[in-house]
Amino acid sequence: MTAHSQTAPDRLRAVLGEPGLIVMPAVWDGLSAKLAAGAGFKTAFLSGSCVAASRLGGPDLDLISFGEMFDSFNMVHGAAPDLLVLADGDHGYGNAMNVQRTVRAYGRAGAAAVLIEDKITPRALTAAGKPCLPREEARMKMRAAVEAAKESGILVLARTDCRPTQGIDEAVARIEMYVEEGADIMFLDSPADDDEIRRGIAAAQGRPSFVVLSPGAPRATPSQKEAAALGFKIGTYPTGMLSPATAGMKAGLAALKAGEAEAKTALPPPELRTTLGYADYDAKAKAFIVAA
Image (cartoon, rainbow, N blue to C red; front, side, top):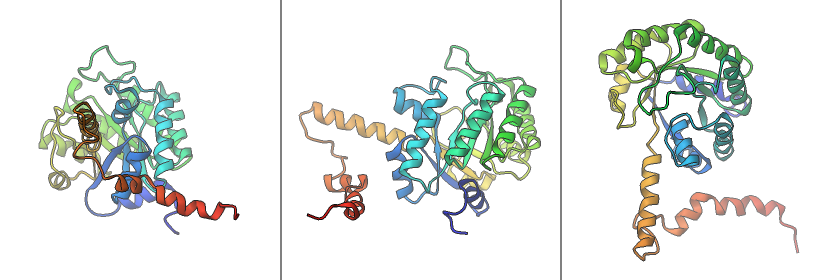
């Protein structure tokens, strides 16, 4: 079988079977996806926080809808069809039946994996903390996700956000529960230290564990080398491209305000045109030009 004849979930399973930490940049649109693929990354995370930033110019506080996320996935997949995308399914955008619709849609559209979490929606009107569903309700949402995933084979990443509000024991119990329910990848968010990280990875019982490695959040944030040594399989960086991209746009605006034509960090025009694929377009279009 060639890579292209395999499904995206099958290809991601193969990548998960390789040694070492998978470094997964976060993407949000066609350009970010194309750049990630061009830099040699096999996988990417369609991050809800990045989509909220790019589409709303706002925070990651459950304001983005399923339709907006799905549209962003189609942009990403269209621009970089070989990139194995983990789609942020958030809380599934409702109850267990909404979860099934979300999982099926991403599976049919070509996502390799989908993340489903246990936080309550709509969230309390505060940016602090993420109150989570009762354990058995969370179980049923995960059961619904795993059942829906059978249609396409899409991998299910099970996330618990309950560590800050309910403690590490409950968070570990939920990871164990997600293993029982058949989820493929585990994510215990906001561990406080290496001991809690090890407990979460042990609870995954050999299934791959996922970690957020971007700096700035109130959580343990190991380096790539430390994350691999602890036993994580996937490390994602939600601000890895978003933060420097935002800095670049700010620099460009500051340059214009200062009377300059562009920021010092701007790409040379030929490099920008190459990155955006002008030459590729011309090469592909030649076959369809009508001879004079």
